Image (cartoon, rainbow, N blue to C red; front, side, top):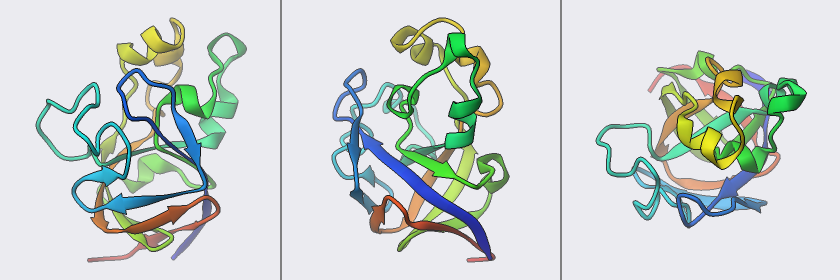
Length: 156
């Protein structure tokens, strides 16, 4: 089933507090993350915490555009790896979905944390509550490109 959604941007950083770098494509490695990203190298702020959902993070472009002026942040400031357009990410928890040739599994919501407020400004965490994005695992590796369609996979 087509979600009529696309990958709007791709972002990675090598360090937990480093500037996010925009890419047009990135290799996604199963059970590891996006090549070159902090979590791929176990250098993310939460890399030491056990559990699934650390491979990749996603956020909706529509959410970023709807933030109040005093909490407005860019896609890079949101510190998510993939910015989507046209899909409600909260609905993908517990679902398999494709981004181009890559299959992901939506593990849990990516609730904003105080680290985001520290890197941006107070109030951003509260403004993103309940709509901070999605944490997903990479199930099938490949390359994700800006403009790739997002497709829901009915079952695996």
